[in-house]
Image 1 (cartoon, helix red, strand yellow):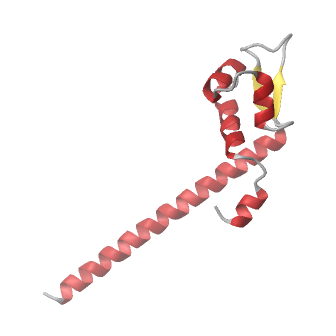
Image 2 (cartoon, rainbow, N blue to C red):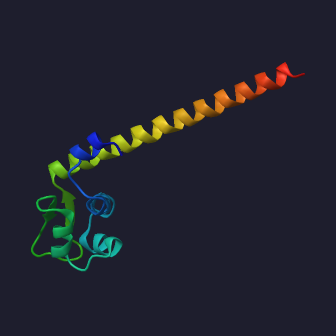
Image 3 (cartoon, rainbow, N blue to C red):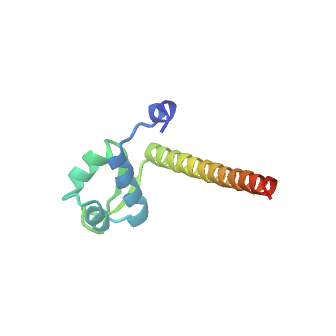
Length: 113
């Protein structure tokens, strides 16, 4: 990752994994199980202050729905777009390198026949 990309990113890899689990699983019980965090207070600390919103009916339990805050959601989506962009660019570069190398090898082989 380039320096300018990490400078604009204000979350850790652990937070990103927690955020991904929040988006994928939505309920507290499943999120705690998948992230291997023991309780919701530790989850909130590790996810970053203000990054999680608990949609509470009466009390917090394993069926409590959790969503990302607006800022966390924006950072998460921006990082996903960045990862897709980097992956796509690398795939195109590799295809170009393989195509160029193959064309060069075929050209060299034709000259020696």
